[in-house]
Image (cartoon, rainbow, N blue to C red; front, top):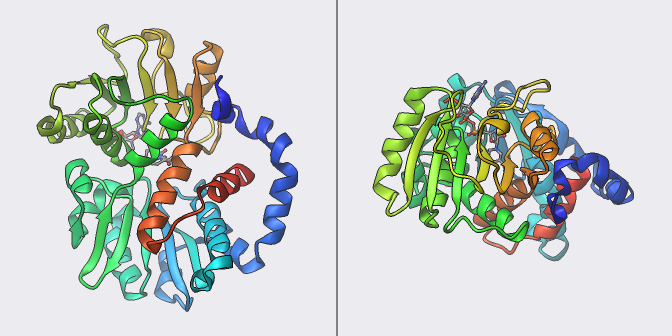
Length: 334
Ligand code: NDP
């Protein structure tokens, strides 16, 4: 295992190194801020929303696992020390049924939320409901960062940036020229696929459970594929032609629940160079356990969480964001 990719067996190892920091970190955060980071709000809470400061939120189902409030509130507290304007900014967590997303987005807008992060399963579902979106969202068909504008919500996507920055920093891998095996065809996979093609990966193999979702993604990606080889496969039957020495990136939600099986049997594909699971809570999934057992370099998604979150916060605040503080908060909270 490599450097900070110790996050594969993170919490047991890292807690030993960071527990004193963790205790100090939580003690220093004011009680209302800790409560904001921990409580799961609902649509009913939104209907009676009374917070008077600048509100941000992550919206998903499930969302209990999300560490976004912890990392954003830590960054905002740090920024408020030198820029008092940020002292009334808070980041909340909302559990919203996908069937209620449209109503929720309208209510978040009415309640004057400044920005939203979307997580599973809302990233692709929200796109038709946006008033505006950037080129990355239009290519990926998925948004994870919404900013309030008068007409509604403007969508951006920081997942591709978050993943590529995380991989570049540690273990120092570039998507450019890489053979990538991407698991999943949902919102996170869509952003990852666009980032891989934008950075001219050598080949992008996408495996998914539901054939229709895979076909739709491949067809959306075709115009951007350039010289990269682009292929799809059934996740349950990995084909013989998968490349060795690849980056295996899990963007399925399989692994979020304790006891979930791995989305793919690594023993049935050529040995990868890296296995990266975008799931970070639980910190070790069945996929990562198998990778570690095979001696393959591997990591969970905590580093991606930090970098995509930092870019989202830059978009909302227009200010420089303390990435190191977000990183420490993520480690302390995991
Ligand atoms: P979506 O709901 O949009 O997509 C879910 C994907 O998982 C689909 O491809 C779906 O396949 C697949 N899937 C779900 N259940 C199963 C199953 N039982 N077997 C096989 N495949 C399954 O979610 P997102 O794309 O938003 O998120 C995916 C994961 O990535 C989540 O765990 C999320 O927490 C994580 N993530 C982490 C980030 C980070 O910063 N670390 C950032 C973004 C996401 P199908 O098409 O068949 O339904």
